[in-house]
Image 1 (cartoon, rainbow, N blue to C red):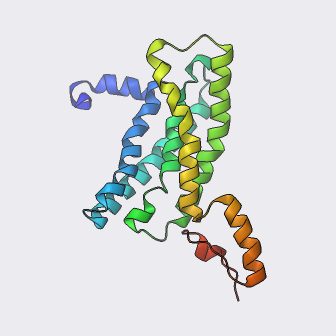
Image 2: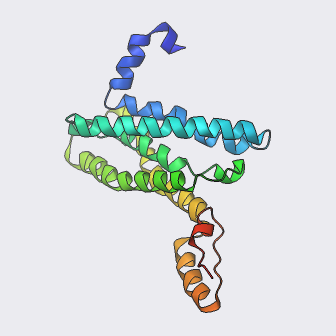
Image 3: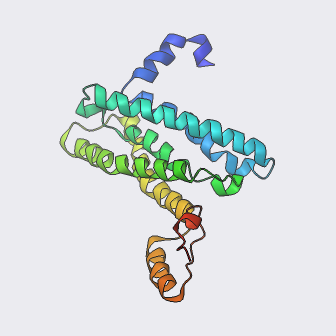
Length: 195
């Protein structure tokens, strides 16, 4: 609606170094909605997920390029910077519900890039909170966003690999000794030892 009534305001918000990151919430919604939608229609849920995944990848690419090509001010390092990264990490979450196959590379890439950026962004934001002026009161609720990359990252990791890391390590050792492994995730077929 706002795009129709005030396109210049939307463009200004999109280009803003803090508020612009929140546009990723649209794509995050499109990545998570297929989980309940799959109960109604798996093909429709897949279509929504595909739109969300493509949109999130393009949006994250745009934001990362903006970060790297323009000088950033330390006061702009707020928890909203995490949104594009969390969006990438959200890509694998609905894949089991929508029963999509053949996207293992995309799932692994999105998880890897998301987690790669999560740690330095968390560090930058934490340093900003410690050494710069306090965030404005209206931005204080965004601090909860700092939990997302690690919580969602764990869920996405388990979705992609099918196991928790400690169990994968034990299963791999046991699997070598017994000739079988216990992986059940999308990448399991690619990691099974060949006979």
